[in-house]
Length: 193
Length: 193
DNA sequence: CAATAACTTGCGCGTCACGCACTATATGCG
DNA sequence: CGCATATAGTGCGTGACGCGCAAGTTATTG
Image (cartoon, rainbow over all chains, first blue to last red):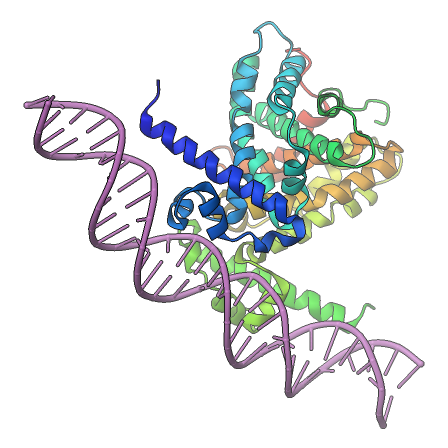
């Protein structure tokens, strides 16, 4: 088992992020300014000063959970069987990572569609790029630009998929949207070239 | 000719962004906190309150120039000849947009490699996605997910290319790095599938 | 040449990020 | 098992910031 300290630390971090996201969702995108640091801290059961030891802005606290999630992208890919082709390995890894459990619509909507959170939301997605690029490089044996570009493109596609899934119009299951988006990355349109 | 007001507005906006970026570069990534709003405003010849009418954070001001640049991505693509295949049209449009003029290494380095600016830097790149997606959709006639995913992947690839170009190791011309990165997007690796 | 709209600026307030010093709790070692 | 040390939580104080508001100034319109 890991350190008690490490587990406590992770627990308070999660307490803060979940509290922050919950309060933000309650107020809605327009009332983000009403979510005070004091509220987040007391809702998480810590002092404001401690909150500030974990996150240096409300935005970072609100998006922290999703950052943690996408940070596991590399491990998710490594968990796929070795023989699998890259495209299906990546696709299934990402589907598993982002739809197990099915994400909370309200939370994702808050994070992705609130203008003030845009920067932090992009950061939250992009933290997965490094680990994913490394895992891709391991799997393909390639080096240099290609693994990084592929990882960045994959993450970008998932972001688009999320936006699309959130759109009120077509509500397919998130997994399907992710698959369709990643298909665009791994087999780009050849007809219009 | 456009409005005098519009031109003035654009001029002060540019004055603020260039001043902000210059001061940030002078202090270096570690001393970002030393770049005060007062300094930026007075360097731009404007009151602090006015600075705040244009930008709501130092980070936004520093990255504002690059945001303006990538916002022109759609127009850059539209300027390519109609018969051109999509991949070369996009590639050449992006090369033209981002290497004319050759970007300032120190400025790009500051924007892309300073942790506190990461969120705003990602935002600056991503503002080009919408217009680029629209231009791609016009050109290909496609609709739905694919144009958006393609645009997002292209922008992500350019971001990776910038990071790579900034790396001290191989200093090829920026245009080459962009071309190689976009090649990864438009013809993904087929061998390892 | 008015009337109106848009922009700039000074002022003031509430909030925030963070350095510092102190306490409490966990970990490792004799 | 107890003691030294490292690590996390907390209170306080301070400087900076974001922004609403209202007044003054400059461009635009008819």
